[in-house]
Length: 120
Image 1 (tube, rainbow, N blue to C red):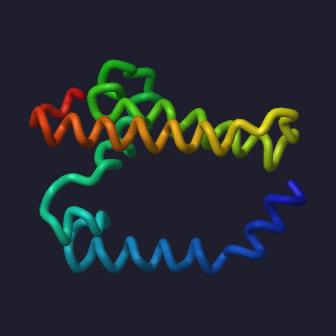
Image 2: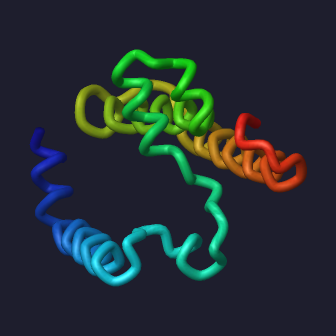
């Protein structure tokens, strides 16, 4: 808990900037994704929020349909939170896990572009 307070104290301005960015972009463009605004196509992370909420509702099929890299992102974030704020892990899998998660997200995006099918 002490580390969380310290992080919030040190990085509050980043949270504020992100919140202001999202509010302004939503008001002006009705979208928060800079990728969609600039290029008018979905970004590699498109569907992650819907996939996460579907997974939390227990709707695994919809979650996988929206963006199956959501599961990799949730595992990576969960392990980071456990290691940083609850109990330090003996093995630090984050660099490898983060790279794998990014690769899964990018490969999924390339498959969508090549096959023009959002279920990949």
